[in-house]
Image (cartoon, rainbow, N blue to C red; front, side, top):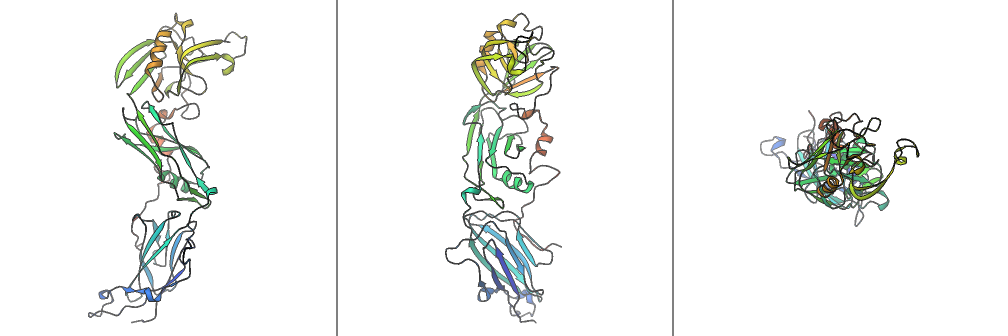
Length: 417
């Protein structure tokens, strides 16, 4: 049996640069090395890293390497103070283990290293360290939307980052830390990266009626990239009301309003005339304005032309940022229910518009079918999120995109075989 010590080094962050002498355990009575108790290498350990109050640098990964070809690492586990595991990988030859997910800043960790020499004699060592605190200039903060309040079942949750995140792996870190819960539970649910700074969250179908939806970030202290760390973010809680859906059939010139699946009103309407057709698809109520002055110049119509207009409009329920509303149109009552004469809005009588205005709230669903207009944009002109199929929506997530599966976090690691 070889009695020379086996040397391993543990490095991480500026964490611990240590020499671990695994050493050889005396064989047991059977003479077989595996019958021996694990050797405690405490007398062989020398710390060259931070000491006293000095904290480790969480900007660097934790790494453990073997410096002797005869010995190998058999297992490593790293946990934080809450007992949560840090994912890592151990090479097939047992020479190197390193973390594969970021360490949190300002946190305490415990690392348990198991080793063996060429005779199979086991060694074991437990190490502890603390990480430092990231600078405020590197904080990645999240602002959730909408504002706290009561909404319709079609209201998406939004997350706006204060700094762009482009790298796919960094997006995975961010998305893993953004949590949305619904009580009662919604069917499915996933984030979608609209751009480098904006994410939207929705269930596969609409939110349940009378639900409480909470969004929060667990990013604080988590490394996103080498120069970006998660910062403090305020959580958001909203509630939903009844499931209100307004479905307008542009070909039959009629809107049917449903509450929790039951039709509660049928309203004669007019929608966009040729050249100004109303957009098809699902929209979400963005807001309500009792009075709006509408001008044709706002949508590119030349002043003084045959299509020019400048009108006071009441009971205006907005469904796109570009100016599509459901509103009172007393000037077109003769066409409502029979033809489409508007410049893209859905017009109805003043009494019906007042009823609609009082019935719906932000987040309620307004759907248009059988129009010759373009399809509602998924993003950028309101909330067209529900026009994206669930399969395509999931492809917009860094966690569920089938082209780039999210990394699997393993609690314990063993040599590959």
